[in-house]
Length: 185
Image (spheres, rainbow, N blue to C red):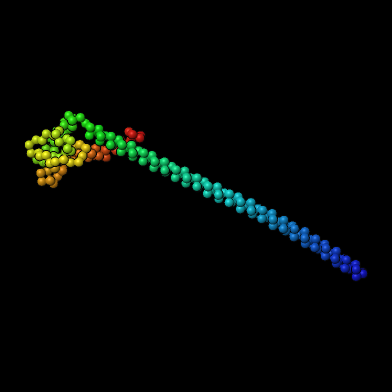
């Protein structure tokens, strides 16, 4: 064989070897790109699922927060209605006709006389003229109230508080559930 032919044969085999290596490299590159595409797709699906879960959690938190705010607003409105009703009742008691208040005060004086005996009686300035005190009861002065009477034992150790505000508060507290039920039930 001639030297040229040997060189050509070596070059031809080198060229074939080069093409085979390029073909194998391109095949390996395509496989790696395909694997990378699969990994990217799997990562994208995982990330989308994580984001969907996160969005669902955020939506649930927003709904819960909105429900809580709604309940707070409702409770505040109900409390305001209850306070307005209480004030309305107190205003009605305060505006009782003089004759009705006079009869009510007579009953309270009788009850206090049985319980305390001799004592001091306090009322607001407006109602002073409406009370008739039996023997042993003395007018003690005025007290800041919207109506009603306060009785105090002679030694000032015991008090009976029959002010409208106090009596309403007692009745209110004993019947709060029933009142609430009738208003909002």
